[in-house]
Image (cartoon, rainbow, N blue to C red; front, side):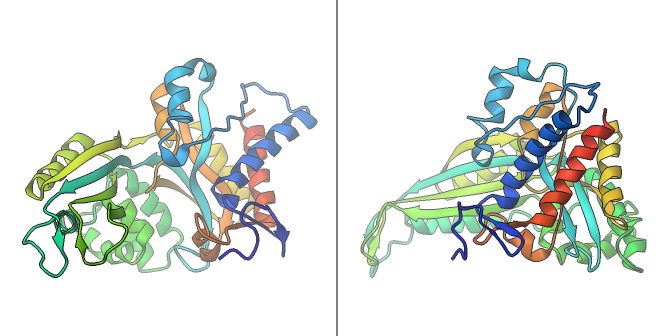
Length: 355
């Protein structure tokens, strides 16, 4: 489906094409260029400065950040702040005409589960009343129906307030007063209309795999079924308590659960010098833009670094249209040259501002 080879990094039409151009090779290049410019211009540093490039973030960090935090804590001695992925700038995505830099300061908890169940095998023309795949499908449906309400957690209130500065009336009035229990019901339609806002205000449950051992024979009922479940939990939700709820459902359908990854939500303070400098530099480079503190629906390596006492923030300081944002993790992912230059400039000026 790629118009350019996915690992070519081809520069065509003012765009750098390739898998990971946005997430997150572009961010790495911005960091590399920042280090080079600090050296070339002999920027006087009053703080230690390190570029740390790690693999394996998508798979849980066992060979990356989690490994470094567990086995090489000394690497981080003398450091205070981390600038990582997790937030992006958007151009007209949430609100038409808006330019918003979303700085990640909090992220949801993770519960990654592998599921399996066994049952009677048989002929597709004579199905038993219960069998493995049927039980698995019914269990997944029960998980989907566990909860449907949206919740505005305290970590999201400031985000919505800042979003209110980008909305027009009357939405801006309600967004800026999102902590008023009488007005909250009027905000929910705005949240429900945007899948990113839904993810930020609910415990999401995504089914990422479903299969049996049978590769042939449509008329064969397999005796085993497997699935994968990606759960992301809001701040304040105990992963162990939530897992217990899922296990109670699993027991009803004869489903076994293997926990692959489990981590509570975590955050960094918003009132630090680094957050202020990063936000100020971003807005100075794009007049009329707004900075919002973001609780990211996904997870980043920041989750492993915050327990070390580091204040961690996520921003790839670029402005993506809806089309560009949609290309992330997809075919035809690309990063424009203009965005690469903008991101490098913001990152470099932030380092200068901190020194």
